[in-house]
Length: 505
Picture (cartoon, rainbow, N blue to C red):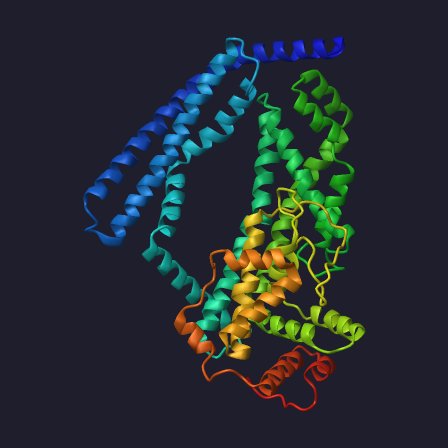
């Protein structure tokens, strides 16, 4: 360690000790009140849980729900109370000379920006966890699913209808595809926006309380999110060059933030040295101001782009089943390679938002962890991985990427092929081969062993296969119809041939 580093370390420790002594009362007294309030709420909720449990289930679903809700609230308030007591311990240890672990500034910011709002919002928190508990009660969960299907059917009166004759199956499929958009939004861009609100807005507020780590981590996460957007734009995978849900204006904002990001100031925050932070803050004040001014626009634009993409996708969920059939028929066709590639390009232009979201976009992203998975690059019409040079980690967790793959395999492809061939074995085989072509053998193997997220009932399978296996001419005729309905007249003729007539399906 150099003499300069030693002096810097001594200054940081001295600053930490002085701030710890000054902040100790401001942290300890409010935290004591927070611990008492949350502890009391936990005791009341735990007593309520015990009372409902003592009824022995005589109240049925209502009693089960009330017991679970009370348990959820008791667990959360107890954890919050313990965390407040932990903050008291840390602040007192810091005041006594402890120089490792969380600083008193971090503890103060956590107390006033996290614990106080959560305690003040106990009724809202109770309502939230009561809602979470409701989803864990099978009867309530089934009722919610039924209500969602009814809502989805109302949308179907103003959107494209499925070619699946059984309205029960088609309504179930459309409803789950629509719900998939919500999962992707919450587990991806909307979740990232909420995280950035906490990281940037909360970080700036925490900075005023002497917490340097909050803004440091928030700014770095925000930079990763903007790097992902900008990386997609550089690879022509943003609008208007692409139909992926990244708007042109958002991409331009991301570029400005990446180019003018206050990296020096953010790195200085990690040193905990107020002198270095002040120096870099003054030197990069323009860059930091740019970040703060552009941040609200990026948050709005992400939300707007997602809302627009989802709303359009909600009007055309059934289109993804027809697209899956057309794409598989094209991949299996005997067209020359050049013509097949051109036909695939034309077909891709007809893809609806559900297809774009669950097949071309989410399943092949690099997850938030940054790990480049085997399926990061989607296979083209020949099964050859298409590498577009995008390597930035996305805003999606691995679980969201896996869900998107399940939607493609189980919810879209399998049901579409069941309808087309009326044969379970053929449908499973076709669906798996398409997954291998698009995402690789590793993904197909995982889906073979993973628990089904979108299983069909025996009645639904029987409905889709009623009438027995279709003949080859029937299948080709249906393929020709589906391709023609997409406006691909020449492709339909080249793939299905002239010897079959198109008829209503």
